[in-house]
Image (tube, rainbow, N blue to C red; front, side):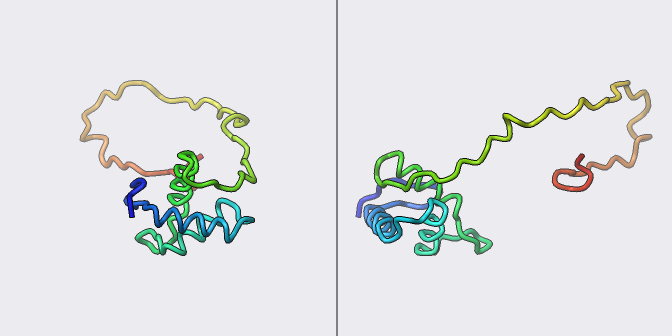
Length: 121
């Protein structure tokens, strides 16, 4: 079987394309998301933590679709683009006055990651 492409560590062969086409034919009403999950289960394509590599599989399917190797079902739902409607947060006042003391006097310095914590505000 000849190699069609290599995508994120997975080599896609002509046999894989036949499998994808057969699954698409067997499940014509499946959404792209549902289909990628079925394909991951069929291939047992999983992340090291055991979850299906669903997003990587969707990307692979889109690459194959754009290269016209397969024909995916139409997109059913386009989520809104929140970047367009998002309001800018108010500016934060930052004290920019220079520190005029020895760095040792500032100890202990502590750096905290606040992303996705109650401290993120």
